[in-house]
Image (cartoon, rainbow over all chains, first blue to last red):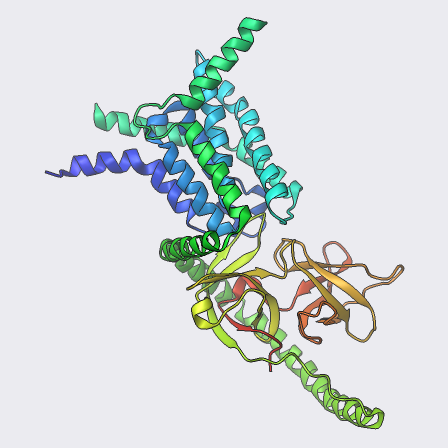
Length: 171
Length: 285
């Protein structure tokens, strides 16, 4: 029988996926709609995917990451599969880093986010440039990437709190 | 050195092929699937296009439902902001109304004079492209992205919408249809970086290309003559030189940017406030 505790537990565990699906199906880009603050816009999806792929991959199925990327591609209008591949590359780098890291710490995870973002964005640019006629502002993307990197520790704290909440409920 | 390389390869192979706990697919498999999807999408065979159109329709319908709370919040914020600016807006509108009334008289005279001159020159009146389809559509998703500035509309091929049709908001051109699915369609906005429109500047015979900047209403005029100085308060119209858009459609206006102390171009339609649009295959009547 479904108990309240079971549902709560499931919900807390699926929270990152729910957020990711919500963000991919919405035009909502956090601070983009607030005048004068849109310069600080960043990619929350990348932060969530990197965090869970690096620390707790059992919370985030790669199949879901692929689907989220496909949804995003359809909504934005970029070549189908490009965002999915970009997110999967991010997962690949995170999984590789998890395999080679002995003692994970915030500082090391934060700075390894740079190569992860680099490879992910490089894949994306390559696809956009070769498989579509779209042109876009590199400076804006660089800015978004920079703030994604910069805000990582803040969300690291929140996402860690989510994990603590889940573990506390399971204890 | 060789050992280090081996370690790297082992870790990479492990990351690619090893399925973690509760993972149904390996990363390698999903990456290959993504690459296949990208290639198939690029090939654009008819059955792929149809499949993509069905997928698009499905995802758009889901997105319409999931984005409704956000839309409602945005609506409340907009209403709140609008409420506090009503007094200033009223004063501004009064001033503009007085100016327009004065211009209207002048325009009537110019129109009559134009007709007379045409008659004298035996020129046929400038026929606009025949308009046989006109569809009113609602903006269902206003997609903010650094790559594409576009709207998703709730009308598709089932309502007669086709790729390449022009879209208007409040009689002003706002973009063209770049993707037509069965139930929905996507309009590429004129402020998108990929939008290039041949235009002519009011009270001059200067031709230019109006390009989007990907930022709010701001646009830029490319290929202006050397030493040409833009003046504020001029309207920008389509020149029709692309053979797609009819000539004389109002697209933008020049204005003086107080902050940067330069004359800039912006769209006439407020794209952020657009809710309903008119889709035609020509010029608005």
